[in-house]
Length: 281
Image (tube, one colour):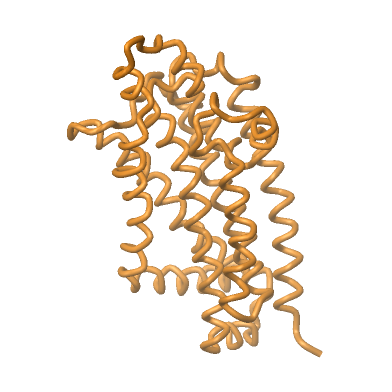
């Protein structure tokens, strides 16, 4: 079983590596968001133009302890990218079915769980890598005269592990769901309609991009249970000094809630994938 899993995983990784155009395209969206949207939407600058500038405490409340909107936004973009990049992982399953690759794989001695697991392992690496790229690029922008991620806390070993754990769990859980949907559907049009019906509401009801202080109470209540919000809360509490005062729970509690979401989503994905890959009678 492990031998089959390793062989199929290597094949998926080689296919990703041999398509540099797709990798470059996937990098374009987060770069545009960071360089354009994150730089332009600067409430601190707007306040400085007012006759009576707002005190810094207002912005700390608005951004839940982050020193600026870009710092708040860049942590949210990490969660944003972890989810959006997984859309294409599931799409690859659809195209493999159209080209006959999936049929040949399903006819091999490999179990459905091995085929699903290989896709998941290989497919999760790209969104995880993109998420850490966003963090690195956000830090770099601050050294070239633009707004950048300002890490005001001292991130220790535990904090670093919590950040890595949040990114990995979020990427894997959505990759598993979208891969399973890809196994279950036949046409690319249907796939993108379904995943967008999931992806957009999840993103737009999270605290990834919106300043928390301007959200209406009903949206705050919804966003509090959103898995993307849980993940970015872990990042923000660890990256910004004093940020924990603006959150009702510790980063560990949010990480535990995210893990609960991951278990539920993985169980759903496993059921969908096993049904789709079961031998046809």
